[in-house]
Length: 208
Image (cartoon, rainbow, N blue to C red):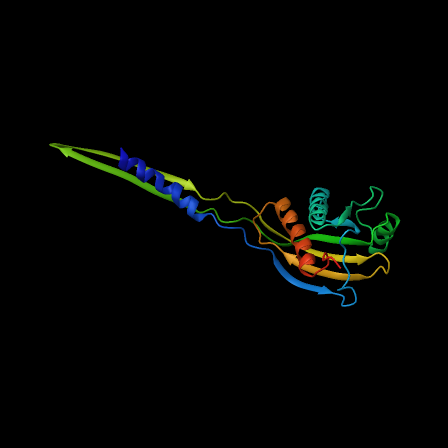
């Protein structure tokens, strides 16, 4: 029985060994206006605004941008409900000025790639034991464990810009993308968090 138990545990160990850390977002480009590079948004008010394929993803994006700003000492402001989701940069910047925000973080989520379905690998295992004392007795069995169900391989990307309220100009921007296969909400959250981290690395939240 100990042998059977040990053999049955092997697939579970193999599954655990297949778990990997999610791949990091790929930053495809980043830019900052040299004239803005020495300014800091710390303790300032910043409006967050997201465009996405659906309203749910836009809300996930805005919530995670706001949460990230709080973590770095910035005061986030959500867009007013009257602001059209398809509003242009000028309208968004005017809403930021009306709200007393010093800048706006504008993120646009989009589908960057989509394959029909991910492969569905299977792992199989057989167990067999034989004993004989004059008469042979055989016990056999097999176990098939799916390692991952087929699912659409949708990959999302983001274009994030920082708009200075006073001038209405874009002063920082970044493009990044995720590998396909993750839940869309997870991708939206990860890309939003990555945008804030990229701004932090650019020094935009440093104390001056």
